[in-house]
Image (tube, rainbow, N blue to C red; front, side, top):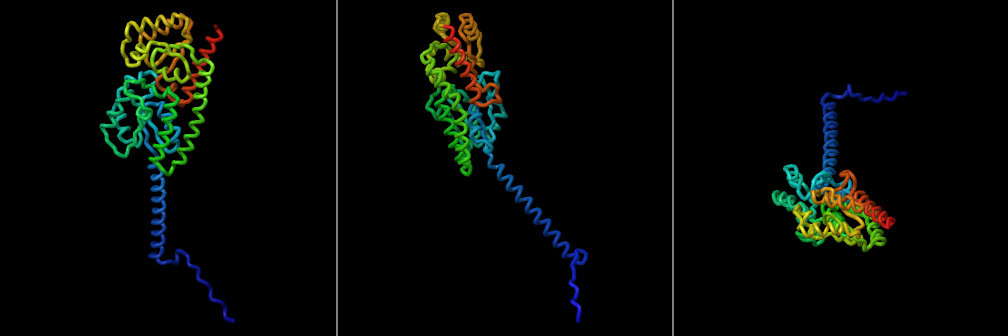
Length: 319
């Protein structure tokens, strides 16, 4: 019998040099192609990140929670030791706004510096939310919109809609994030309703109109002279008659609480704080921006309301 011919085993050493070179070159090209594909894919994912600039950190906290992993939010005004009414923009702010996909402003003259930066770097594809325009509050009116829970709800709904229009592929994600945020906001908004139910009609005072929206939502009777609290908010000297009236109110025994803006402090507001303490009126500190800056909007707001609630409870027990 004839033996079967042995099958030849082809080893790399038996291949022609040109063939080996061709195989290696092909492998290198394929490897480079895979690397480029992965890099392009990763860059594509990164490019989907929406660059957001919020003029203030209270709006920044809210839009950040809705956008989640698909946004990068820079909040400009966040210094706990500064009065936001006196903020002056800089070149870093200008660069951030120039490169942003989405800008969130308070409006009502509160952050007019941001409007100037937007106008200095026109971009038709950049989306802008001005909360004051959204809720119909005009320049000259109370600009502390984030203290109004109804305005907050309107703002977050618009934020969700805006983010979805900027990245339609993640619209479902933004909608889910909005629902989560609404759940997170519920404790502070429910606390407002609880204060209204228990203390509606209670007379309170404030050194500035920052507390006006919250007092109204909670059914509290803010009796401080409008001329006084509006002048302080605008950095002006209140009329003398309003100062005398405010002092008389604090001495009347009717005021159950003084809300004190810790970021808009003047010798006059400090004197009202001292007078309130002398009259055994509890002083509750409120702030323009989130305190501490690294916490969330809802935790900050709820903490202030707990202070209000505790102060009113203590007054009720003392009577």
